[in-house]
Structures are given as C-alpha cells and as structure tokens.
Image (cartoon, rainbow, N blue to C red; front, top):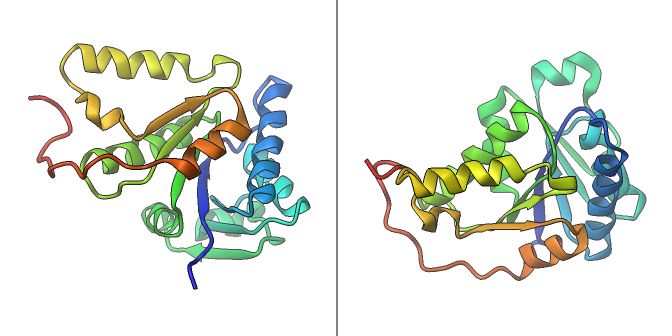
Length: 197
C-alpha cells in the first residue's frame, strides 16, 4: 500500500504583521486536508507553524511534527498532532522532515525559514532529491528573494536548472495542486559545487 503524499511546510514561528500571512497559512492547511495530503512541519504550536498545523487538523488532516529537543523542552511543541517526533538537533530535524515528505512548501518566515528553503533548494541542485519546492508569495513577501535568485543566475553563480523545481504562486490551492502534479526533469549530474566557478 502506497503511503499518502505529504508536503513539508517551512514557515515562521511568528505571525508577521499582515493578517494575510495567517489567512494564507489557514488556507494551506485547509487545502492539504481537503486533498488528503499530510503535513510535515517543524512541530511548533506558535506563529504560522501553529496556524497551518491547526488548520490541517481542524479539517481532518494528518500532521507530522518534527522538533529538536531544545525547542520541545522550551514548551513550544504542539502536542495535539498525529505524530510528534522529538529529535536531537536541527540537522536530524531537517533530515527526517525531508525523508517523510514528497514536496516542500515555504510560507513567509524569518531566517530559519530562509535557511530551510535554501538547504532544500541546494539539495535539489546537487541531485540529493527530485521533489518540487513551492514558494507561497503572500503579498509579494518573496519578491526580493526571487530577485536575488535571478540576480545570482544572471551573474553566473546559480545554474538556472537548479531553479527548475521551484514553483511560485500567490494562491494556496493552486500551489498545492502544482506541487502534487509536478513531474521532475531528468536527474541532474551530481555537482561538486553549486555555483559556476
């Protein structure tokens, strides 16, 4: 029996200033549950992390949380999940989240969210995985990031094929659908370096 698809969501442990950030996190949770797609995320009950988990659960969806011990003991772990895995540290957290997921989706967030996004994007460039990566561009939040990636490609430091698995949308429902229907391109040749040098 084939395991159900799961999408790993990276997002902020804060709510952000615009109500649209919270509203779209709710819509992602609703879209996942409606499509019977499991959520894999960082295991917290705070900020957008908690919002997307609660919205998924409230609509009958499956939620798998993965949280480092140091954060779990700081009492921010969400204990109402389908599964909650407490791991030793951040490296173990990201590895298990990636292993349990068939796609990745980044919502607005801070430095930790950016770090998770860039690591999973670099893994795709190295051929470590061939899973799609989505950016939910709420109110243009990721416009500067997308401009930076374009700038890096124009400057010769980012191979454009590294950006092939990247799907961008302002619409939660459409983006979840695009991630589920994504067909990967031919596997890239493993690279020693992620840049052109």
